[in-house]
Length: 236
Image 1 (cartoon, helix red, strand yellow):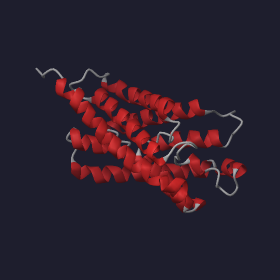
Image 2 (cartoon, one colour; image 1 turned 135 degrees about the horizontal axis):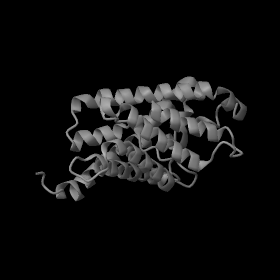
Image 3 (tube, rainbow, N blue to C red; image 1 turned 180 degrees about the vertical axis):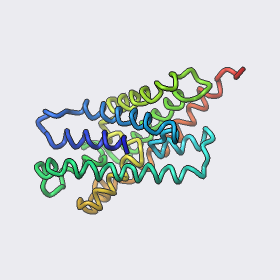
Image 4 (cartoon, rainbow, N blue to C red; image 1 turned 135 degrees about the vertical axis):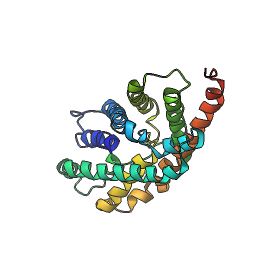
């Protein structure tokens, strides 16, 4: 929920002030990173701060996270993102109406879409690569046998990681790299009046930010296990 409050909130601020007076793309990249960092600090001690179903899946496949907890974690991630989208819509209602009274130009506040020249195939691989980078580096930062940052610095570094992904991998498809981040706000916009087009636009794009990150998360975990984890020095 914290992640989406910052991430969707900043996109709402930038989108509804097109003159750039309240931020531009760099603002979006930094605020998403802050949202991840603060979300991890908030929930880290209680749940390990899995803010992303793709990350949860990767930890279940490679790091022994209990499979019985995967479903409840994904449900919690999805519900938190949905409630956060509702809050952003409520608080920014006046600005959203002032920009697009019929709502058609503001759905992008809440969920992603491919860039103008980007095909669905390219966007899918973009999501796979972006999420693979995310999971690979998260594993490196938190693995007990790797020389990662001190525990209290890991959330900060994960936030910086997301900023970097946003700045380097945002053009093709908006770097969702998180199924809950995209699906829940998209579902909210459908319920809140944006209509079925939120699921049919861009050749039914909506499934890409769900499937692509899941594939990328498993791939990133596999690559970390293959190239890094297997070569850790033995524990004393």
